[in-house]
Amino acid sequence: MPAEATQATLEIDLGAIAANWRILRDRHPSGPVAGVVKADGYGLGAARVAAALHEAGCRHFFVAYLNEALAIRDVVPDAMLAVLSGLIPGTEDAYVTHGLTPVLGSLDEIDRWRGRQAILHVDTGMSRLGLDARELAILAGDPGRLNRLTVRYVMSHLVSSEVPDDPINRLQRERFAAVRAMLPPAPSSLANSSGIFLGPDFGSDLARPGAALYGVNPTPGQPNPMRNVVRLSVRVLAVRDIPVGTSVGYNGIWTAARPSRIATAALGYADGFHRSLSSRGSACFDGTPVPLVGRVSMDLTTFDVTDHPAVQPGCWLEVLGPHLSPDDVAAAAGTNGYEVLTSLGRRFHRVYRTA
Ligand SMILES: *Cc1c(COP(=O)(O)O)cnc(C)c1O
Image (cartoon, rainbow, N blue to C red; front, side):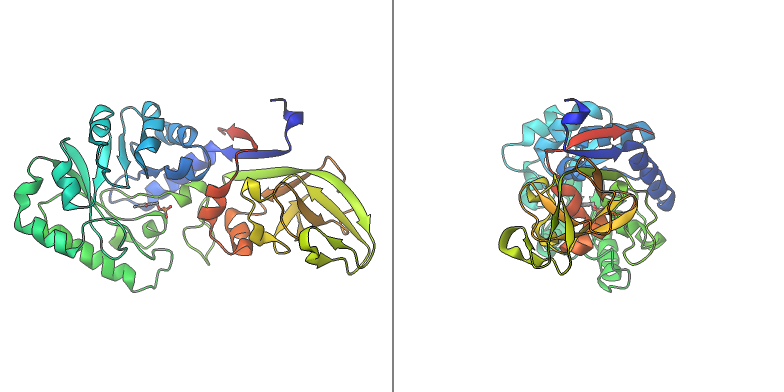
């Protein structure tokens, strides 16, 4: 597709993702750092991301579902590739055939697994997946059930790691230690992105960061230690002057209080630009913010460029990038940076940068 045919360009900096992985590795001296590339690499392209991480030296990868693992197996042929969602009945052979590592979270899954290696998931507070207290007690009383398999890691997942003073963090760490003492000795895996920044007490034999690799701030409220990874630029399709009292967009939720210039940009909620940004979000032109006015619609979004006479049809507005991080957009949209990234649409012209 020729560049001039594109109405929006998503630039993804694979070099910055690799640099972020190195930052996390240096922050987690107790053991290696995996790459979590579920949800198509948090929306940025799992195959490209996994290849870049692998080149940086990453040898452990996590996805959510079996089909996500199959899609990138060839990209990381020699790495551990683990599937977080557990062992759905009937999928056992696919795991064995492709050398995948299931994350087992129930006695039934343990008993059904006929492969060699697995990760054992224990629930220390999330109440979603993982062995619960009742199942752990049964397993501790019958450790022979684990004899057939090599437990590569005993794993748990933190509930509230981005809130350092939430007491659940310490509680989960203590529960995790207690659970590990009940089971045959095995390496451990605990911290996600924010968990790595909770300090050495949360170190383990394998950290599992996702969001921070992609530039989401793992330490909300403090300076972001990660590099920005994405830039989304969208084309201005039209610019018009409207008199005082004229409304803009569906349902007329915004009305000009002064004679205004309105730029209509090639982006909408079908591109993952959340409708909740209506009259709340912003874009950036030449490094200065331009307020979003009116409703975000499916394919179009309107901005007040009255104070930016240089904005003309054909110009580009930055809606994500160095001036407007996924966390900034998330704050305006009432969500988190994870959802902003994983929502990024399929209509963008994607460009991968390696330096
Ligand atoms: C998604 C996920 C991660 C990665 O979490 P981030 O907060 O994105 O770093 C780690 N472990 C498990 C079990 C997950 O589901």
